Length: 225
Figure 1 (cartoon, rainbow, N blue to C red):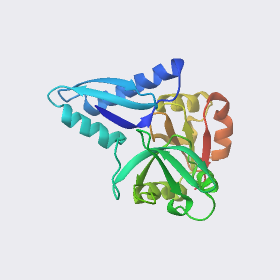
Figure 2: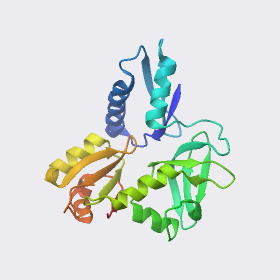
Figure 3: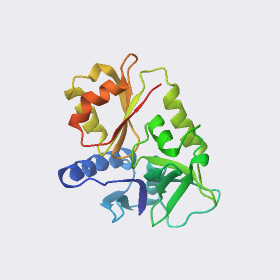
């Protein structure tokens, strides 16, 4: 079994749609291997995938590489993925699974000046988004996580609108329904239910957010590039 570093925290029909979407994504990742899989959601909302078959080890490694993996024990100096659970002016708290809440102080975010709350707003970081960190006595965001977030603010596009509580397909359908298909470049998947809408040049992210916000029961935050 591999426990993916992404959560399913919605319920009802939305949960069924999310898990159906994940099953299709897992099939894309490992469908050509000699492996069968069963998807479950743990009490902490992290997703487990039980894999059997001749290629089960390869399949688990592929899924861990694609989604990140949460593990019971964290070693100093090693890189892991946690999901943004909460925040305050002093830092971020990442849920790294198995009861491991990792607090990254503001100064270890490495994302410039301001409080952690201000940094979250500036980089459009929605709750539950997976973030890579380096574990230690004082955990920090990884260089890869920092670079990705900085790149969002440097892109030569119209910026981004980040969304949680929705699958990639749902976000794309919402953008189309709101009449903004021509105003975006793509929708990037950050996690199962966390997406990043890449705006086309000339698109105003706050305007797009205002237009689609009423369609999505989600947190939406802008990134201005």
